[in-house]
Structure formats: structure tokens, C-alpha cells
Image (cartoon, rainbow, N blue to C red; front, side, top):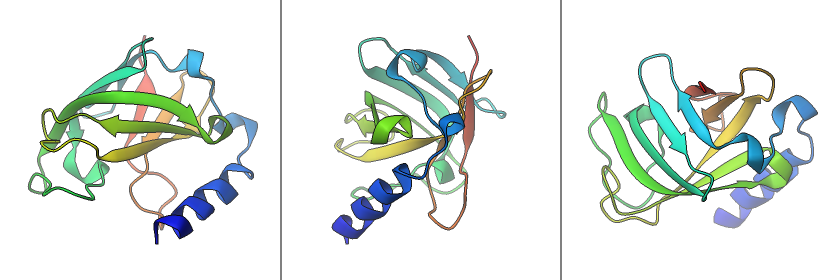
Amino acid sequence: MPFALTAVMFGAAGCVSESERVESAQIPGVWSGEDGGRVEFGDDGRFELSGIPRDAVVFSFIDPPPKGQTVSGQGTWSVKEKGSIVELIYDSTGSFVEGGEAGSLGVADSGDPLKLYFSTNSEKEYGYEIQKSD
């Protein structure tokens, strides 16, 4: 199954328009969601998130917080798939007690302001959206 998901992700990256791509240099800074969710991406490839709705994050290996709560954590980030995906690898901090969980953000709009979204459901085009606020 993971192989099939990888193949779908690689195939989709080839069809991504320029308005849905970012460079690594565009990511560092503070990103915010409408309801107070926040992600701070560092120049060093580290990130810290807080107040992100639990439903925005896919938990594969550990028991997630109850529905309706928010998540927090830290980890590393990198731009993948020719600029169409920001990959997140969570450390064992905050809501990610075991660490090693992986997530991704898609590029909703690379214009001004930049907008990313948590990729949560392959049936939906967008998940929880954040935009660069600095």
C-alpha cells in the first residue's frame, strides 16, 4: 500500500502548475491558519507547530488526540516533489509522543501571500490551510 501512495504522489507532482510550487527559500517564517493554528519554519530545516486542528493531521502509528482538540509538536521539514510538497517528520514532542510520524503540506498558492495546506484526505483537494504571515 505505501508503494501505491508513493506512486500516486510522484505522478501527481508531474501535473502540478507553477502556482502550486515553492522553493525551500520561501518556506522559513511564521505561517498561520484562520483559527489560530501556527507553524514556524526555521532556516535550519526545523519546524514547530501549535494550535493545528487535530483533524488536519494524519496519525499513522500512534493514538491521536481526541477529535476537536489541537495538536502541537516539532520536527524537520524539507521541500519534495519538485516544490509541490513540504514534507514534515515529527519528533517525539507534544502530540507526537513516539515521533517518526510523517506528514505533508501541499502548495495551495505560491503567490502573495504564500498558502500551504495540510494534506489529510486524498478525496479532497485541500485540507487545513495556512498562509505566510511575515
